[in-house]
Image 1 (cartoon, rainbow, N blue to C red):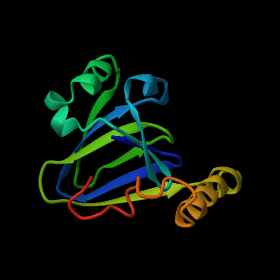
Image 2: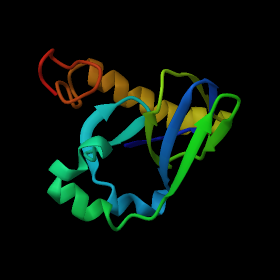
Image 3: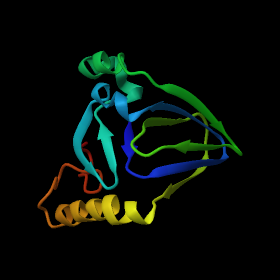
Length: 138
C-alpha cells in the first residue's frame, strides 16, 4: 500500500490486476510508514498479510475505499496522493504514466529531488528505504 505524489494513468496491456484505492482523507487509517521511497509515501499495511498485522488491521478496517479490476486494454486514473494496493491476478504487462504540471515539477518534484539528494548523501532515511535494502532483511 502506498500513494504517489503525482497523478498516474495506469494502463494494463496484458493480464489482470486488482486495485484497492483509498482517497487521501483516509490517510489516518492507512498507517503511513517511515520508510523512504522516492516520490511515494509507503504504508506499513501489507494487504497479503493483514491477518498477521493486528494493529494495522484494526486501523485498516476503518478505511473507506473502492475496488477496481483492471484488465488488458483498460486504463485507470489514480489521482495524486490516492492510497492504493495492487495485486496481479495473473502474469501482466502494465505501464504507469505519471503526469506533473510545470508547477508540480517546480514544487513537489523539487522537494522529492532534495529529499533524494539528502538520502543519497546519507542524511535522510539511509538504511530505511526501498532503494538500499540489504538482502535477507526488510
